[in-house]
Length: 282
Image (cartoon, rainbow, N blue to C red; front, top):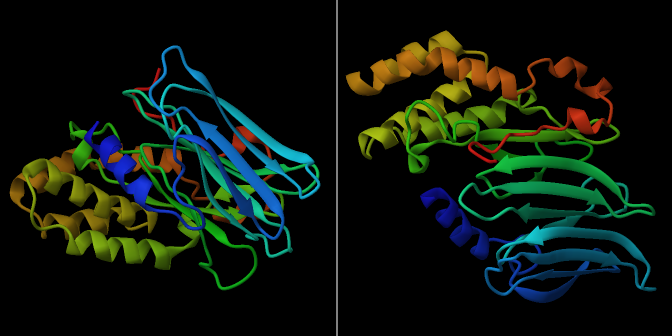
């Protein structure tokens, strides 16, 4: 719950192109001409009401409509609108928040053409942000986020559970997970994780060590990384990490794609989207 409350505070402060979604009826523009309008309830509703988001052309033609059952404010929130494919056509990114004790955020990216086309659907769980970035200096932008695959792991409380890097690439038809194709991006996260190891309570120290170990696994350095971390942390953290390593590796390799050479041939199949199951959701 603490992580969810923290995320909500940060979410209300961060935006790439419009103010963060607020309750009620909101309107903004997307690209040179599209109008984006969305509605969220102004307070918690029981029974729920319908939240919605609509994109229209200057002529009033509706090219995208999204609806969701809404129990609380901030159910639907636009994130940004950019020409991420570098083809002169903008894409709209937005999130849908389930509310309640079990979170969670689903992120969508839709190409605003006629008809509109879903480029990405990703269940981000406890994480709430997705942003475009150019990681390989060419072509369509990558989409970066964080994975909450350790949301329930090894007895860690929610506030200590780490997030790992998450990168999606465009394969010609849709965005697919391809984090391991960007070792420099992972190494930068690892450096940050290693510098953050000291300090905090025991649970926080375990979570920080797990984050660094996760980066090592994504880099293909499982055993070396484990040995390195055990020299950097206290004996009790080292023992916990040693006992948790096998399960951590299995979870990472279940959630991430390591056959990156096959990604360019992957088809736009909804069953192939990167779908993190929100821990504890019913």
